[in-house]
Image (cartoon, rainbow over all chains, first blue to last red; front, top):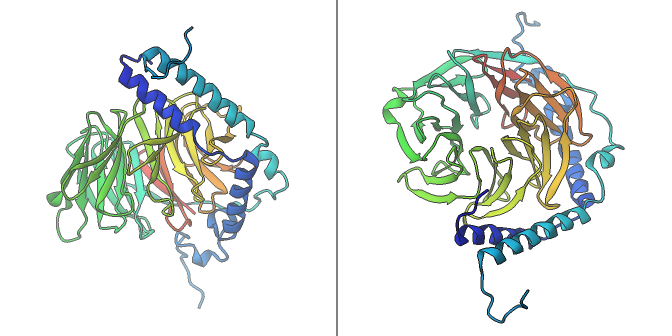
Length: 68
Length: 351
């Protein structure tokens, strides 16, 4: 990227200053939280665990015959 | 070299030097905290063995490539937009078309439902974002209203939390927040060096943060109120076509022309996972997470949807069906279904 003037370079440097000041946590901690979140919500995730019964799937195929 | 004077004079040279030092410092700090890989942590977890996602509906009606789609908050309707300038509102249960609107432009690359479900927005090569109030009584194009205009195409749009504002991304490399009522620009977001391709809002708890992906290969996190970029992620080797917040709000998933999807963690401030295989060589156009965040759905140029286990970093399955590249996809608001749109002119619903 060609920086044509001091204003643009100042913006870039200021952006980096802000990003350098961010508080970070170790990946192990971040990842543990992601795993925890997923495990807490996974049982309600129909695309992962499926439907308890196909009848509750709003997009199930319409059955051509019904059980009387 | 002279020593630091009391009055610090900023010159281009000093700023460039400082920027270089900051980049090194940033990389060092990030690397220092990179103590484990996600896949290693996930090793002890059970594999996903129940996968029963099937094609359930095919929505036919577009005469050209489907470019974008969005679920209604009612979990039943879908708005889609196409290369031929059409926007269609579908009842995905019945596959009926409830509205078909012709836009005064081709390549309608962006469309979105408002949170109320009573309004949709779209835009594309007209550089605009236009809203259409939905009513069954009359032609919806009669009440259309142009809200914002970029200096290049509108690539993506969404309503952040209310019907009153629209957030857009554009080929002019900016994002913009518009007031729907007045059409005024509330905030613009400058920083990307190339076309913005995708934006996503952080889950509501966090409220005022959104993510953008761009052809400059970068992923930016923005503060909507200040207009400032608060974080940036690099790693992708080509255009970032799609970005999506993980439902936890702590990470973003991305899809790129470099044939990979990635996961960037906001608090670790770095990439924590890459979803790729040697056999996958085609670009990714769209990504979305299942409600728990365990699955990442990704639509590719090779007509397939790959389903990734976000934790174990392996592909769980492939969804075949489309006959051309998959351009958009989205999990329904309640997480029970996946919609996909393709250059084969159809949308499909999987559940």
